[in-house]
Image (cartoon, rainbow, N blue to C red):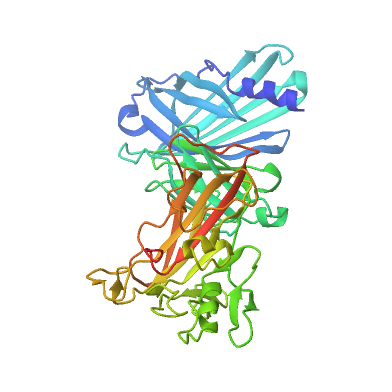
Amino acid sequence: MKKSLLYLCALICSMGLFTACNNDDDDVFPVDEELVGVYKGTLDIVVNETPIANQLPKNVTISKAGDNQIKMELKDFTFAGMNIGTITIERCDLKRSGDVYSFAGSQTLTLLAPIGTCPVTVKGIIGKGSLQMDIDVDVQSLGQSVQVAYSGEKLSGNENAEAKIITFAIDNAFVLEQPTINEEQGTITFKVNEAATADELGAMIPIFAISDKATVTPASGVAQDFSGGKVVTYTVVAENGTVKEYVASISGNMSILKYSFEEWGEAGKNNNKYLTPLPTTELASSNVGVETLASFGFKGGFPVLQDTDAKEGGFAVKLVTLYTQGAGFGLAPVVTAGSLFTGAFILNAGDKLASTKFGIPYKKKPVRFKGWYKYTAGTPFYNGSKDAIIDKIDECSIAAILYKVNADNEFLTGHDINTSDKIVAKAVLQDGTAKADYTEFNIPFTFVEGKTYEAGAKYKMAIVCSSSKEGDK
């Protein structure tokens, strides 16, 4: 059947010069004034009473061939993925039929084997700004009967010719990289979480915008099935009938490292217990250091807290910079910033910056670092000691850093997390100033000049959040 249809396409689109309908009158019709122009419409194709194409958008051009004759062109006819070319009827005689004009013709086409000779008839009505045309083809060698119906409306010539999808997005947690439109190739691709199921991929809802006064099928906001490698073809038709197709598909899967801060556990000893976000095998905080200060009598609380003022879900992490001057018999700095990070906190009283062991094993190439935050700067700003107060406003710090290691027990610390030559890529929040409401960050990873991701190499991912950007100083 597929082979038959392929030959049939060639048959439909190979129509040449039709026998003009007889017209003994010498009438002069207003062809230029009323009929000539471009008609925007659609094609329906039926084979042996079975529809195989419906509402296929296409323009037909009508030009003058004589005082009572027209020329019809169906330009660049694409059907079933094949560009057949242009169908032209050089001359078709007109007959007045009330306030419109009818035309009819017939021709026997001889095509390549196995199709052979096929009788073809055409008839139509044109006028009052519309065109309807029926083409019947009898494919005797294949025992098939084909009907092609066209209906269109005449354009004024001032219509918008642009047929584009301008923006395209899918608001779904499993979409990890939003769709990218390739205008030249006519593709729309996006990446999803590798954990997404077929049911989840089968109910994606794209939201998009198109050119002014254009139409599109299927419409924006309609759920589509992208599971199992399926693609969705969007057909955009401009106001003037220009057609542009876009094929949307999933281009790949991605993994996601996510911390929602919904699960908490108890940590600390004796009377110095506190809540800490889980899992503790991946997340650490400056609470460990302040617990030691508390054991020496510090009563200022902990810098990393559970909070119900969350963007979504039940909880968020609240980081607070504490005044700790003199605590722990002088061991503490003037301020201790609330910090949360991937890795471990192992107290080193002699080298406090070495206490932070940043990073956990990470085996894939990172693409983006996303989340939500809000921030209020504390006052005053201490520059290293309680007496060195300067005129400066504090900022927060949020960053994700990928670095290369040779062994699992290798870490970057507070000394070199920002300067080490082991760093391969970074995603750093640039605006750490005050934000009264939750603000989204969505930062692409930028690779250090001269460095790339090497499959099979050992890496660690350090996500570091601090309530004071210069808290390590």
